[in-house]
Length: 121
Image 1 (cartoon, one colour):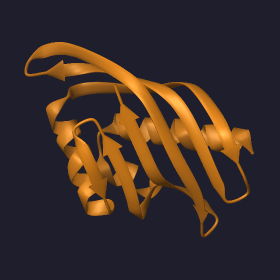
Image 2 (cartoon, one colour):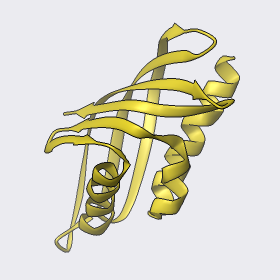
Image 3 (tube, one colour):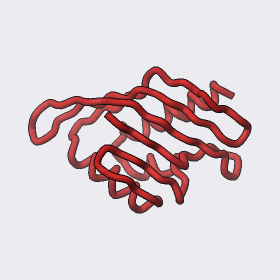
Image 4 (cartoon, helix red, strand yellow):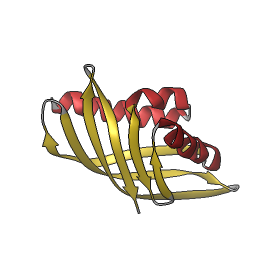
């Protein structure tokens, strides 16, 4: 199952790097919660607004997920922890950052969906 989960996470990373919300949305449960350094977002519309704000703020962003660990894996629920890094252009200046992430996935109608994401510096 870890191969399937690794593929899911890599596809999610790739979708984020497209900077197109329609590519990211299929990975996220409609009632998900996301916790970012700048706030908490509940439900797909709030999450969409937060992610699109990031897409607008960071031009040419490259987002990477590394050092993934799977502390909980069951048939229907998964928790992964990882390090993330980003680089891009903010206000005309090259910028980068990163931190730690935790995702909780749930199998819904045969597909994995993110029900919670927590990113922090």
